Length: 286
Image 1: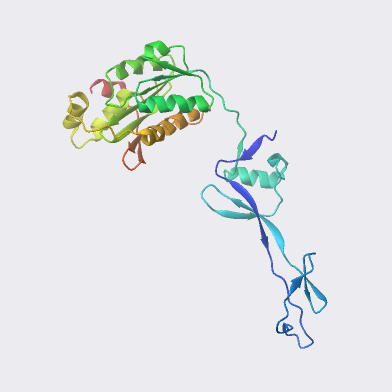
Image 2: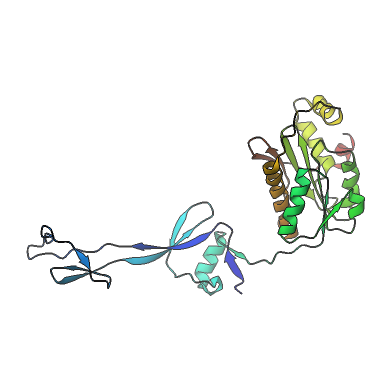
């Protein structure tokens, strides 16, 4: 099997270009087609006119379409084995991000899913489909033998999240969180160790950036009257797909994301913002 493959979203196809030249009479002008006479092909790639064959100047060109929609005609013929490209083309494709190393899907261990709502159920089913071993557990304490823990809560974050920050990150267990505020699902970055962003960091940063931190803190902790849940099947699977993609990136040891994502459950759109961890003194003051 080839070691390299096309990057996600990159495609290769062929385009046939060229025209058929018309034969000319002795004056150099194209011969006129007799009225009522149709031009026919010979079936061998040539055009026939009054017994004279005119070559078809068509050519097949290889075109590469990037993931962003740019079309790039390429000179070499690109076969199935991308490792056989000449070194210069191979290096140019890799520099443009058009080729990637073929990576087998790998999960470092089971993924525990906490929560009984629609998002947790959708995520559990999706993770099984992409090859993860999934454990449904009631609390993070029951998942200490797992490689990752995801807690999907269809309401505000429970107080146990702060305890799980310490319990899981000290054991280098990946810690993923998703909560819901009104019609917004909040997806926090995965914490893989004490140096990563925890729920406590996210909470403190959001309070610091809020125009009304007192109201926000009261909103998180107070009892509320709520309308119908905005989480239907489509919304649950949409959020679950984002969570699963983050877990796949973590499993493949790609660069950890330091972004907080807010999912509008009405329009199914996503906004994100970078978020940095707080110092121990700052986080302890919140």
